[in-house]
Every structure is written in structure tokens, then in C-alpha cells.
View (cartoon, rainbow, N blue to C red):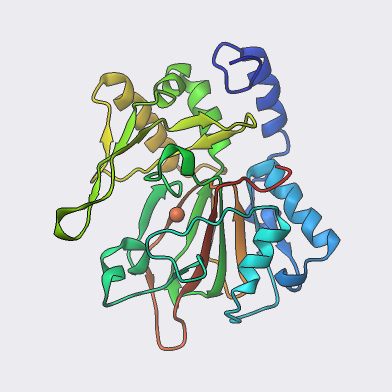
Length: 293
Ligand SMILES: [Fe+2]
């Protein structure tokens, strides 16, 4: 690796990048939120305001005027406008490749946490995907919020990288080990392997030199390399994620609101629906980063 902020041997480039990254870094969720009209027809100034935030923090939120409109064109338009096309159709996605995140009390989906009211712990999306199908961007659009809870916390993965490297560059070395994190196979019906073991690094560099993170904090169905370096790196990352750091943004996406992100670290708190407030989010995952970030 040559000159790169993510090359452990190149402190000079790293420190320059780090300073620029942290200078005027937003400290409040409001700084990341852009009021817009209709996400299907973004005005130039709305688009630019969102893109500017994505460039700085790898994420931005919009508050639009579409309310509880379920039109799938809303998330599709956002994807097109921000230059992402390779929509990842995962196992439980709808026919049109979007995923509708809502409570399912029966069928196969009830067995998957995203479709329950339970909290989802820190992760980036697609950590169980093969190396050539990593998720570089993830968008959410809220059709309706829950009666209570369902709050997302988010942390820019580049900030997580900085925190770790500043504490001990050895953590980064450990997390860049291509063997560090394995997800065991998923065995489907009749014992057939539905997804093979996926092994890879936590931090990797994309073809365009950007930082990508593949992570889950869950302890079940996850295999970490068994050594003291990995334990120490994991412990440091857990500490960052469970701190009340001003870099962690928290938000309940209300009707008409959405998130654009380069698949930053995130979690979800548990939630409760009532007869009028049934949480429904569209999620879309792409193989590209937001264009121009
Ligand atoms: Fe997620």
C-alpha cells in the first residue's frame, strides 16, 4: 500500500487526513439533518446539502414531506440520485429488492431479529456477505415510526478507525487481518448449506482507496481469531461503541424521514407498536458507495 491514510506505515498522510476529518466534525444530530420536500424530486440545493454531509460524516438524514406514503419510488429515487445502482437482493427482500423492515409475527421472518421488535446490536450491514459482495452503502426510509423506541444509533466507521488507531495502531493491524472474523455457514432446509463460511477483515480498503468496515458485535454465530491481540482490539471497539461519545448520533426516523450512509456502524433499540403506530422502514443496500463521497 502506498500513500494512504489507512496505511499504518504512513503516519504523515494519516495525520493530515485525520485533522481534516475531525475539524468541524458535527457534534449534534441536527447538523446532519436536511429538511427537504419530496425525495423523489430532490432540488439541487437539497441534494447538495445531503451530499456535503455524506462527504464529511459518511451519513446524512433527510426529513421529507411524503409522510406515510409507501411508494417504493421514494428509496429508488434516492438511490439513483446518489449514484448507487447495485441493489443487494438479500434473502428476505421484497420482489423489488427493497427490504421492508416491520414486525412479522409469523412466517420465516419472525425468526430474524430485524423483523421482531427486539433491539439490534452494533454492526455494519452485510458482514456475512462474500468479499466481492460487500455492502458499501445503506439507506433507510421511514414510512412510519413505532409508538415508542426504534431509535437508531450511528457511528461513522472512519471515526471508529481514528479512535482505535490513536489508542493503539496494533488494533488496526489486528482488524485488517483477512482471517480475523468468520461467520459460520447458514444451514438451510434439509441440512443444505445456504451460505458458506465467510471469512474476512474488519477494516479493508476499497478499490478506490476508501475505508470499508465489516463488523458485528454479536457473540453468537461469530468466530474471531482466538488470540490476545484480537481480544484487546475487540475490547477497545466495544468500549467506544458503548460510550456516550458525541460522535455517536441517535435518531428515531419519523414518517417521511430517511438515512443515507456509506454503511456506517449502527444499531437499533427495541420498539413497541400500537394500533396507529406500526413501525415500517424501507432498507436498501448497495455494492457502491454514495457517488462523490
Ligand atoms: Fe443494519
